[in-house]
Length: 276
Image (tube, rainbow, N blue to C red; front, side, top):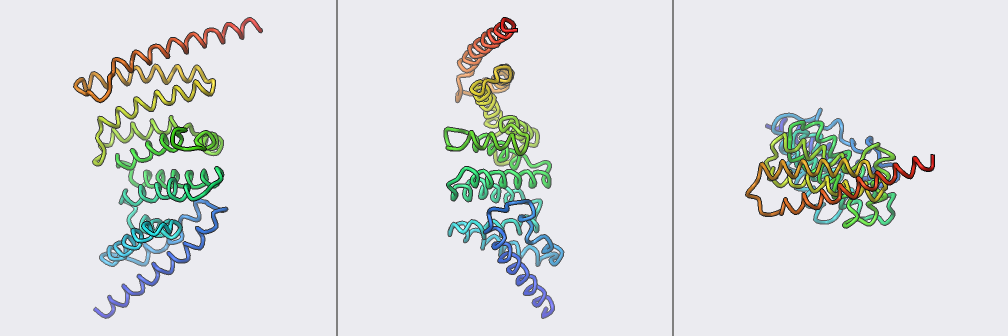
């Protein structure tokens, strides 16, 4: 018993040491890289069995306290440590990703620093998804973040974020959102209503079409609209009793937008031919 007690104390001291060292590395936000997210990479090698569970419980208590105190940098490192000890626990990946992309990003004024932490949060969630390849709830959170964080109705620098995502990651946020949302449906999320996710996919297609139209990508906008019509029709066939959305009205609106886009593309093609 004495040896076990000493082993537990040693492990506890190690975890505290790595957490405190990690906090210092996160303070330097000018170098936010994937390497910064592993200050406790070797901790799991020191722990086993019930000791690991006790350490995780200790870290969760500390994480909740730091979250309430808004000590986000220390929370960042603590949650990262938990993810090393419990990589198959989706809640820590979701919690950490949201902490970076929303809480810490909100603390900064410049769009560059905000984007840095948004990107870090997305990367962390994707890393969690790779370690939990069948977790529909984690996939939903990723899909939601890719849609919500780039919505100009909620975020002042959404256009900047969208531009940086394309430049640095080669991704379109709406395409990424649709990918993860559809993957969520296929993996039976436990915390989310599948019907609501299917409806969210339809709405995301509409937002993607409007964004593409605003950016002058009329061919892409038309593709999104046509996909949205198909999705809404399939949704209505599957959920005919749903009264939350007037599907017929939505489809009519989409069909009208489709005609506008087709007319715009035709005029653009005609203009190009004339100039040629």
